[in-house]
Image 1 (cartoon, rainbow, N blue to C red):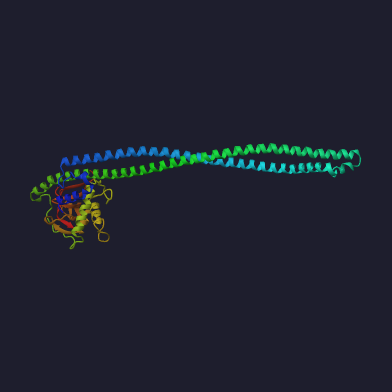
Image 2: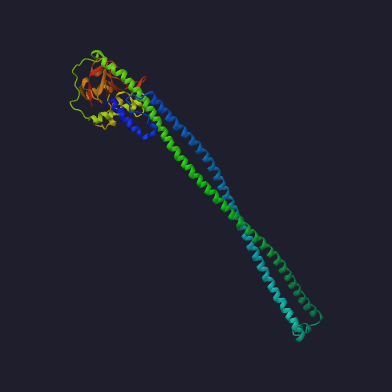
Length: 401
């Protein structure tokens, strides 16, 4: 696939960004105006995301205050409920005390009533004072009279205790009932306050969730806008580079940087389809655009050397053990089918040698088309999109995997 077709396909894929990317044309080389528009779109998304973040922060602060209010209301509710239980227990105790005192006085009343009845009867039959009249002497009579006086005194005391207890019990019940009414009212008030606070908290949480969703959406849109801007910048750089170096490749007289053909042979068959070769090219391109570093002996995903990039690219295209292995640059020359440089297709491998021999091959790249290649060049230069003649010592054949 040519560079222009790939760029057009990428531009079509970017249309999901909607109106924010409508200004970008499916151009092989984006203009500076398009890149500037992409920067402005990215800045607008960032401004919207920052504003949403401020609203979210304010909503979270309000939510914290409402949460504290609800917690305080709950604490008051629990306290009021405990005080109500205590007041109820005290009222019950006072009522029980009044009941016991009333029972004692009732018993005393029965005794006093009996004496009064007997005294009334005594006036007619003297039956109750006969034991006194029949006493054995004066001292016995005095003792019996003393007992009767003692009974009277006890009944009088019991009556007085009853009256006092009744007054105390009645007062205690009034206080307990009043406390109970007060506590019930306080409990209802606190419960109502808690409901208001909880409702407010729920509404605020709903608002926070909504704002968070908006912020998440804006952050995603910001990331997409940033990718658009970066992609356009890279497209322009690659297009300018292609313009400069593709011409240079065509003007190289007699391909003087290519070693003479010494008749080296590779495999007699290939193992890939053009779709797989295109997939390998796309993988290599992605690593170069991501500006991955060159580190000798690595094959991704964060860094590559030259043969490591080739290995990872074709592994991503579906080749695996035992059909595909990590080899050095020279071994790949014998592991692939040799094709003429004039017959190269994207995905073919290019080899560079110090002496024009297989054993002295020191570098390997992936052909990109139009005289260009994707390569892991060196520690100093990193991964590059470059002209196939930018390195001396090109072998006179390519390797088709």
